[in-house]
Amino acid sequence: MNIHEYQGKEIFRSYGVNVPEGKPVFSPEEAVKAAKDLAQDVIVVKAQIHAGGRGKAGGVKIAKSVDEVEIYAKELLGKVLVTKQTGPAGKKVNRLLIESGCNIDKELYLSLTVDRATAQIVMIGSEAGGMEIEEVAESAPEKIIKEYIDPFIGLTAFQARRMAFKLNMEAGLINKAAALMMNLYKVFVEKDCSLVEINPLVITKDKDVMALDAKLNFDDSALYRHADITALRDETEEDPKEREAALLGLNYVNLGGNVACMVNGAGLAMATVDIIKHYGGEPANFLDVGGQGSAEDDAKAFKIMTADGQAKGIFVNIFGGINKCDIIAEGIVEANKMLGLKIPIVVRLDGTNFKEGREILQKANIPNLIMVESMTEGAKKVVELVKNA
Image (tube, rainbow, N blue to C red; front, side, top):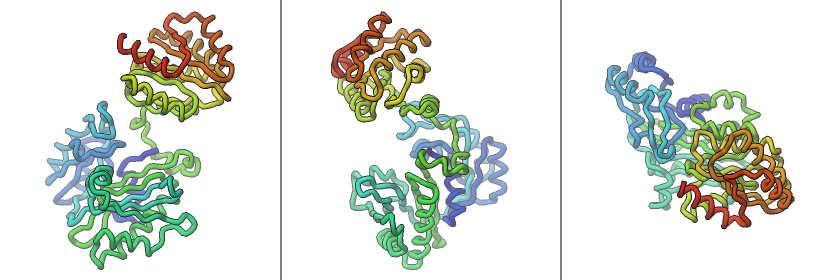
């Protein structure tokens, strides 16, 4: 689960992490009032969406007067921002953060995340603040500094100070920066985060250390422990298909293409996405129906995949195990009755009860359904049908 920058900064503030004064607003009138309340010479107007790269997309404006705040608020509210992380469809701006300007001397990068290879939390720092860290890691990996944190000991003051030294902070700022890092680690652990990122972490000209941005991602599996975090969820920022699938216990990710994929097992689902791309198609989604679904659940999965006309073809790629092929077949038949599907459905059934599943589909006599023997054959066929549609 993700939250907005202003929500992340409120969490930071509650843990003693220094952030600029600011207020979320939902209208130009609220923006003007917030700017007057701040009473600063420089006001920053920041679009609030669940995506990075807002500055490059024109989502961050520097205002020198209340009148400029109003102009920028009117410009940004309702605007669709397109960044690397939103995809071509972009995200609509429904709220803004009106924030005091900051007298920046130096920009840094700092984050905490989980390193799966070492099964440890890792703190990552860089002097290349304000830049996309992925680009820095690729073009100048020597600028990336890492501190691996022992899960039994936690982040030590020594490690925090060492990170500050490696970021070439002035001697007088080392302890202040280390304290901020220790507080960030508390946020990460106590709130069950999967990512805590500040980009940029700034050194101000009056020698302060401040989080100018806040990006927090939370482990969905731990949200039952954090009613306060769950209350921050902004469903307008989430894909409605993904949200509906989650309520059904399905693992669904919208990939934006036009070939819908219904698969059992995450590994097979990823392989299916890959093979569709290999044969020139564009996967519409990643969908793992798992191993415990009923025919009704499978029919609901079809409804999610075909909603809003995004999918121009469907590839059902099942290797039956716990999830039996005959149950999948019944779900396909039920989905066809419920939705009256007209787009091509290519089905590959193998594994547990595959003969029974194929027999069910043959008896159903669905005109737009094609059964195939292998995954390769199925991928080729569905891409061909979608391209010729």
